[in-house]
Image (cartoon, rainbow, N blue to C red; front, side, top):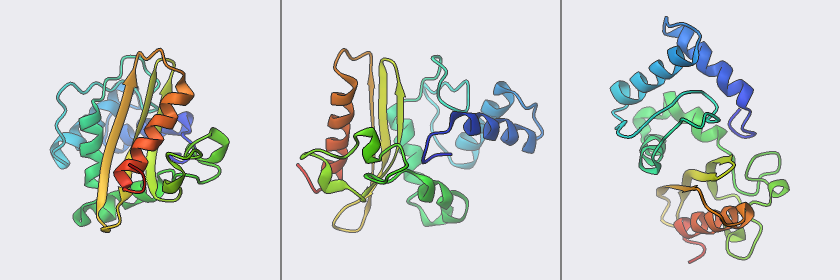
Length: 177
């Protein structure tokens, strides 16, 4: 679901999560469980956080880049590897064909980002007027580095924004500066 950004599966998982927690299989039931798990189980700050669906397609969603980074930081903590490890394993990898970071989407394919092929694990987000790239990369020191880039209401060419975000991810990795 994550690698190819399948919105139908994402919505189904949200509703199944609601059912698993004894809530109604609705947007509201699912997002309530998401909020509770993030804040109570993982201690994620939900300041300025609004979620209304499972796919991220709702125009009413508001998730700050800092919150996305805080969630991704959990993936680097060994105490959560048994519960969250599959998320890290499921993230698209830069330059991996068949994922949202693959060459067929024009990702990590220019001089500023090609050094990071195979090194960035990240989730894309793309709607008209909103583009995001949030993920992790291991630097030369072996430590995970977390990033989250979100662009809203830009008038720039969306492909230029994606190329810039890929270059920023390569910079976080340390292979391009």
